Amino acid sequence: MDTMESYRRAQDGFDAALAAVSRWDAPSACAEWTVRDVAGHVVWGQRQLRAWATGEDYAETAGAPGSPKPGVLAGDDPVATWRAARAEAAATLTEEALRRPVTLPGLGEIPLAGVVALLTTDHVVHTWDVDRGARLEPDLVALADAWARANVVRRPGFFGPELTPPADADAQTRMLAFVGRRAWSPVPA
Image 1: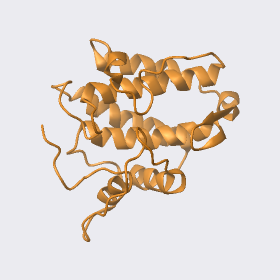
Image 2: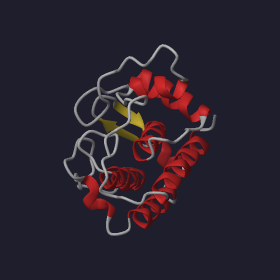
Image 3: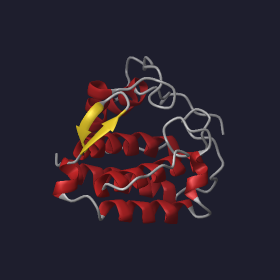
Image 4: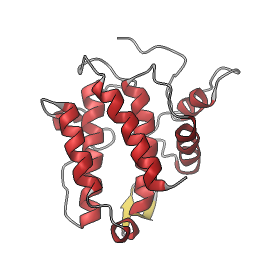
C-alpha cells in the first residue's frame, strides 16, 4: 500500500472521528488525556511534521507524546484547528522533503517518510482513542499493527504495556492490545 495514500486515509478516519465529537473534555482512551488533548497532540504532530519537511524550527512541546495537557493546541474549534494543521503539513510533503532525515527518540535517524508511516499508525490508534466504537479500516489496522510490532517505543507518553486480548479477538482488538489499549473494555465516561 502506498505510504502517502495510507496516511491520507488514516487522516480521513481521524477527521471523521473528530467531526463527530460532542464532548471535548470527555476522557479518551489515552491515559490522563481528554478527547481535546488527543486532538491537540495530533495537531502538534502535524505542525512538527511541517517543520521537519521545511527545515524550520518548531520548539513547541505542549503536544509532544506524554505532555500533560496538549489540548491547549486544539484551540476553541479543535476540528478547524486540526484541518488547518493537516492542510499546512500536507502542502510541504514533497518527494524531496520525504527523503530528509530526522531523528526520533527510540527510533534514531529515519527519513521523513518513516515519520509519515509512524503518524499513520498514530492516526489509526487515535481514531479509536477518540471514538472507541470505531471500526477501523482492516488494511490500515494491518499496517498499524505491522508498524507498531517493528518499531514500538514503550515508555510513558508513547505506547503502553502490551495487553493480552481475549482469545477470540479480531485483528483490530489484537493491534490495539499490542499498543496498550483495552479495546474490549469500555473506558469510563
